[in-house]
Image 1 (cartoon, rainbow, N blue to C red):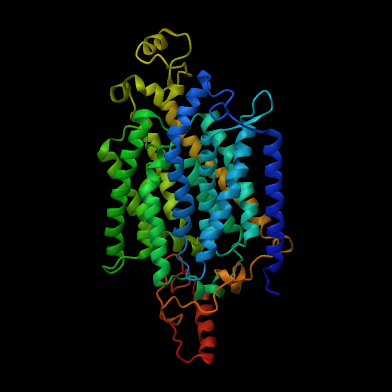
Image 2 (image 1 turned 90 degrees about the vertical axis):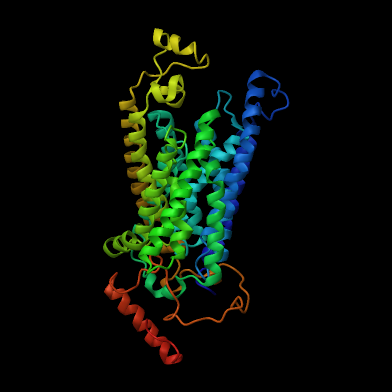
Length: 506
C-alpha cells in the first residue's frame, strides 16, 4: 500500500460529503435572481440585472479560462507533477467556486432567507478561487489533495470575509484584486509554507526541476494568463472605467514583459531563464490591479509594469533564496515574486494615485470612481453634482487623503489576516494522523495520486540529476543557500552513484 492511499480515501469521502452539503444548501436556500427568473425578468430590476450579467459573461469566460488553463498550465513546470498541477487546479477551482457562492450568498442573504444566484456571483466566486490557486502555487507538490481541499475551503471563507471588510466596511478601491486577492493568496500560502518548514524538501530535490517539455507547457499557461488578464482586472468596473482597465492592464503587461526579458538576460549571463519569463512577465497585471480603473495615463501604466517586471525578476534571482535561507519558507512556484511583491506595490501605488485624484483629472466622475468621497445626501454640493450625473448617490464626504489612508489600512489588514490565518491553517494541516502527510522523499511526484504510464520519457532520454539545470528559486539546494542541505544533496547523489556510476555531482 502506498503511503498516500489512506489520505486519498479521506479526500474522496470528504469531497463527496462537501458536494452533498453544497447541493443540500442550494436546494434549501439557493434560487435564481431576477435576471434569470422568468417570473421577474421583465421587471425594471430584472431587466437591469439581465443586461449587466449578459455583458459580464464574456469576461467571466475569460476569467475561468485563466483559472483552468492559465494557472493550471503555469504550474506544470515540475517534470513529474503536470497531472497534479492541472488536475488539482480543476478540482480546487470547481469546489471552491461552488462553496464560495454559498459563502458570498450568506453575506447578502435577503429578508426571505434566500441566496439569490446570478452569473456575476459565479464569477466573483471564481475570482475568490484565484486566491486559493495562488496559495496552491506556493505549496504545489508538498501537500496532498486532502490537505489542499481543507486549505481551499477554509481560505475561501476567510478571504470572503476579508473582501467584505475591504470592499464593504472600509470602502477600499481594488478593482483587480491586487490587494484582496493576489496579496492575500500569496502571503496566506507563504504562511502555510512557514508552518511546514520542518519538511525536508531536499530529499526530493531530484524531482523539483523542470524538463524541456514541462517548461513549454508552463509557458503556455503564461500566455493564457497574459491574454485574459485585462478581463480579470476589469470585471468589477463599468463603462469608461472598464475600458481604462483594459488599456492600463495591457500596457502594464507589455512593459513587464520587456523588463523581464532585459533583467533575466542580464542576470543570466545573456541567456533567459524560463522561470522568469513564465512568471515575471505577468507581474504587470498584478501591479495595476488596485489602480487599473483609475487615471494612470499610458506612461503611468508603462512605468508600473516596468517596475513590476524588474522587481519580480530580481525576486526570483535573489529574494526567494534569502527568504528560504533565513526563514525556511519554501515557495514552489515563486508566488511571492509574481503575486506578493507586485500586490504590495500595487496597494502602495493606489495610495499615491488616490492622493493625486481630483476633479481636474476625473471631472464629476471622481465621485463614481470613489463613491464614498461623494458629498453627503441632501447637501447642496451633491445636488450640483447630480445635475451632471443624475444617478450619483450621496457618500460619506471623504477626502481623497482619507481614502488613500483606507487603501493603506486595507493592505495592512489583508497582510495581517493572511499571515495569521495561514499559519493557523498550516499548523492544522500538518497533523500527520489527520492528513497522512506526504513523506519528505516523495514530494513533487504524480505517481502518488495518478495512474501513470509505464514509460514516461516523452521522447527525450533522462539525464542524470547532476547534469540537468535547476531553476533559480524552485531548487533551493544550491551552494550558498543552505550549506547543510547542499551537503545532503551531494551525499544523496554519491549514494546513487554507487548504483549508477554515470552520476556526477554538480
